[in-house]
Length: 548
Image 1 (tube, rainbow, N blue to C red):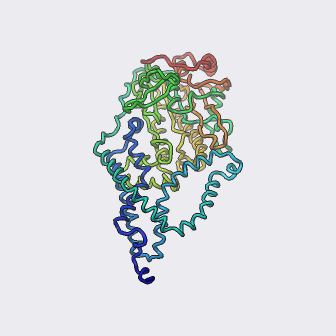
Image 2: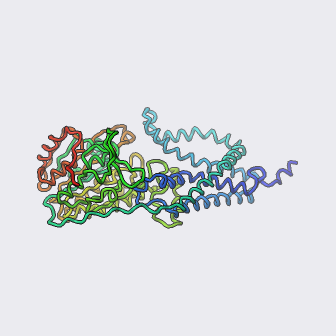
Image 3: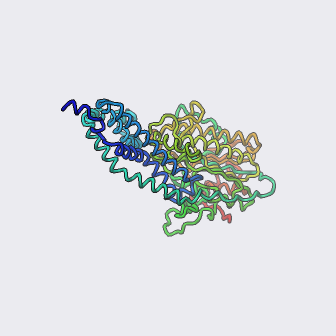
């Protein structure tokens, strides 16, 4: 009896039949790509995403994800069938354990949440060990579970297999929805709007370059700067500018701060349900009717109406679609992800490749999604390319003497963090939260490159430079346990450097109106600027004059 049992095919002991194996493997592959399916479908489920992205998923992307699922399922199915055929009963015992390990990979996505939780624990033990040490202890505590898993592996494998069979109908749901998306594809988002023609005439005697570095932190730059961080360009500017020590941004979120800075009013930006434009609504006034951002009184429209050409280079907002009317030059880039979170790398950077490139990209994103990748994520690689392209366009605009106002919304030091301050290259691994320090170094480098371009093209001596931020580093407590509401604010006038420190607290919402005063000649020196801020710093809002 014992001898007959040993001659029985191994698959009789486990998942009998190749059809069941096929269903289990397909269901397993489909579960792996659940985050990818969700991100892929969310682009068309949410109209606002079509407005803020330059490229949205096409039928090629739907087909690529389906192919990636089928290829992964085929690979696992082939491995299982080979194991059944060529391994003995004892050797095949490793197969259910391997299948269990593969099925557990999606759970690894929760590591992101665990890391975030550990970073916020402030007990002395956690602070001393660090989050990697805490995760190591958690992993060590799970070691005793290996024995019961080995002992009851057949039962566990049976439960996992049965669960995947139960989940298999979701393959029809995901593949069916992808097919429906392909059949109802509406095409790519509308292109950017037409730009304003250049105004004729001589270059203005004084021009303004207004630079907003995204999430630039005052404290980590000037107060608690890391000993390993050098920022010579920022320090040089500080010695030539009106340097504010108590400037605060209007809000802590970009979609509130940027509309407020550009208009001088406290506004909340949002995309309408149709995804056709960005609306702005007064913050705190629920009865106010949303107004298209392009129809509000922005500094760009006011300056254009005054006879100045305007250039803009930015990211995050689709500037060239929603406020192109007064702009003579414009370029913008979307963020490298649909949203912040564990799934952010699925679609970043793969949409510009061919079909098989996307298949490989989505498959490799499995490793990035579950934090098993080494080197740079696709989001970090996209950010590195974005920074290079952004700087190329920014340099052209700041060197153009015909542009009376140039506005730069710079994508650093906001994450992802691809820059490595020790190598000076975009080969960083996007470490959180310490990667922010590397991005501060990149902030300094970018500022230096922009200055060099203006000096070499002769525009530096005719440019008023204002650099600030839309908000400080919101997660600075994760870095060193501290938080400071202040943002940098440096205002440099051309000619002989005149440094001054401005200590009173004020809201940078007055920046646009200050720039309007500079371009119209009522503010021409550091002293004038300090006096102007003194007169306006008590105002809750500082709207620019109407320009339409």
